[in-house]
Length: 187
Image 1: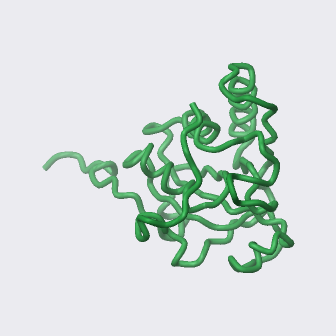
Image 2 (image 1 turned 135 degrees about the horizontal axis):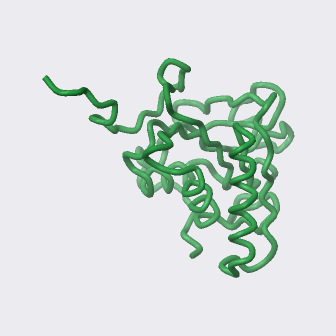
């Protein structure tokens, strides 16, 4: 009998992440416009390197539904929260991809989607994540790959609750292949 590896099955889950399930994994939370496309692009790019993905709302101070968030009055952003194993994928790689897969120079807008719920934002879960996110932002800005000034908010998740989106929004574009998506790779 050999050693049983926790990496044997790397199916990405989309259930609520519990502290027991989290184990040695870490959280990363990104807002890059409509969360349907954000989830699709991250799942495609990182496949089995992610433990789980979940779309939801963050940044507001009370629980809100999709319809309430869409009014733009709750201060929530549509976000993707991923659980990942740091020895499988680096946080800096996730952040680099985040800047690549949406337009971080538009304030409260991605494609046809407009409103503060579609803002470009990274909610950091540790001081190290904050530092890395700021460094990557500065690197991308200096590289010239992005035309215009990056307006992405980078803020600590401390004191902010992640609210899981409704079931129909989880893996929406996998379940609705012809669904709306305005995301693309910019470089």
